[in-house]
Length: 147
Image (cartoon, rainbow, N blue to C red; front, side):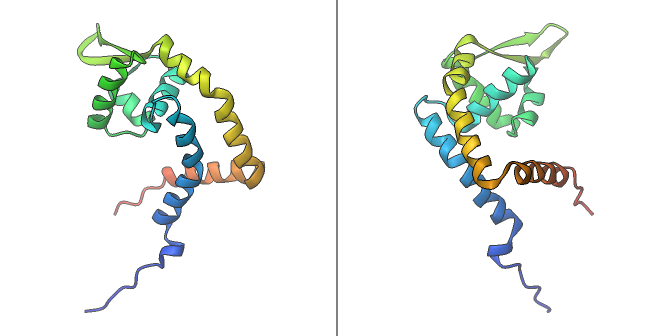
């Protein structure tokens, strides 16, 4: 049996992406710790603010969450009055999620600090490199790696 060596972890794409994620998200988590909103709830609020009311499936996709996880998160967000949910009148099986005034306030309360975090990151990494990285990550996301 032939043993195929694994790539060294220092050059492993999945591990490199996790390290990069921690570089980016560490300061964001610290910021959000002050509000009682975790990063998943933050993403949901950001997506709803940006897109307007969405059905749960589309919201899960755009917020990069699994639908069962989103369902659990939305229950907690409803309890916190950060979002509202209503049955879609056109399709009673669908639930439409909207951001509330309290949810918008969370975004507003952290907007300046969030902008500062990413301005520091962009200044350290470089604006052109940041744009190139984002373009490359979008390209990678569209790559089909299935057989």
